[in-house]
Length: 442
Image (cartoon, rainbow, N blue to C red; front, side, top):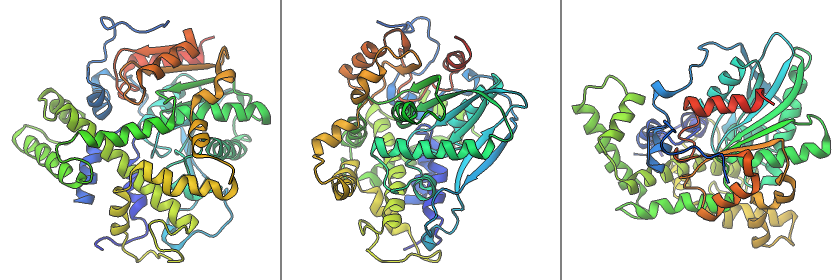
């Protein structure tokens, strides 16, 4: 084992808390690893055509919204779980949320991020700034798959069941609101989720219909998958297209890292930033299959932190031997490497589903997979005017029939952009303006 410190996975996750899969994240990871209101093609200005490339590169800086450089914020540290934490997680001192607040009565928007995102991921902070600039209070919440949430926000410490995750998120929102309600006035409550957060948002909203704490007036879903199971299987399958093939992710990534390093060395670059990444795209430095492979590896790295954290918190013995108490002095890099070689299907079949069967022995695998779909909320979402959705025609997490399903389900409440991949265009100025309009205009 090479790396010491109980904060290793958290440190990795902190760097990898992707609002989208960014190449700097992957570079860092390599070091650590060794009928529709659809925008027309001709009028939509987002420039990156490829789905994988858009997902990796995001939005060029000059095409992003102008956001306020400073926002009045404070960090909320929520104490939700009373149980003693394993020593290896000594650094976790509560669930972190970021709260941006107005000095006057205003709507309050909760933001739920995508897989692996912290409360301060770049997409979360962009949404926070845009909505704050529009006059809203905003609270950003870590993804249910982020180690901080698994340790301090989840009651089961096992993410992946939409109903359970929604219950955990709702508990966090209640706690966050109690923390701040004496300091601010909220005129209404709104909810926005991206990717995984996008599919979780309606489950949270439906729960709120029962508990009536917030009475969400508007809920916006950005790039949600229709089926969470189908989406992650698609991401896993992206590794099948790389020349090295599945199981040789390290060799593939080292080769890609060499490409980037050479390009950086011979180019006139001063930093690995958005300008560098856009130059990489313009040079066609990687193929479509390689771009897909990079996305899959980024997902694996995020999943690794999730699996390790959950395994330690539940003492399941899946990766770390059962009853092995890890301390802050134990090296963790070998566990990390093992976790990066676990696919989502392995997590689902060997860990998540067996965990649920302990309390719900009658639950079949088919029933559980079906429960991970927006289609289970069809009757609730159909015609419900408080919901809106924004997605992209080339979001590779959606099969063609799933995109058609979303268009049919939401009708005029769906905005489908012609390109942007998965979350690649969230920070594009037109997209961000429409997000703000959704919450500020009737």
